[in-house]
Length: 174
Image (tube, rainbow, N blue to C red):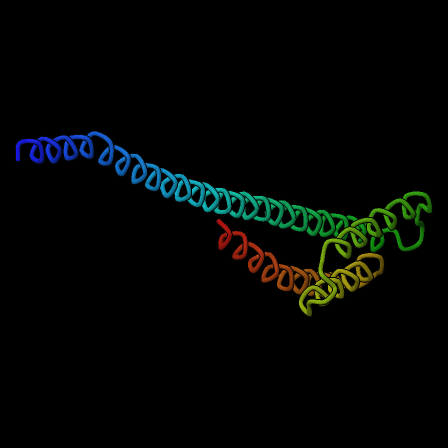
């Protein structure tokens, strides 16, 4: 019996020394693989989120720049129209041809830039262009001051909701 006990004790000791570390090694390896997979998935998810945030920020910045440019262009156009209206209404008989051509050209540039900045598929954008064209027509004529200011008010009233809506879009991206 001594021998059997000795063999059992030896086998138990051998298994404790070899099998337990092997099982522990494989379990650790499986856990490490699972942790590595989980870490890779987390990195991919974080990268995706970061890319989406960067893209949203770029879009927001571009929209904000567009809003600022459109607002500046409309303000520049209004300034031009006021100068043109004052010039053409006060020089009905003696128009300086060179200056009037320069003035008209400046108005055309503002109109073209506004047209290129807007979306022709949106109804209020089309209305904005129509207001700009009407305001430009009145600026180059001897229209009454009342008609000129009515057109100005209509232009501003048409532009403000467009700018506001785009600003709301920018805020929603932040």
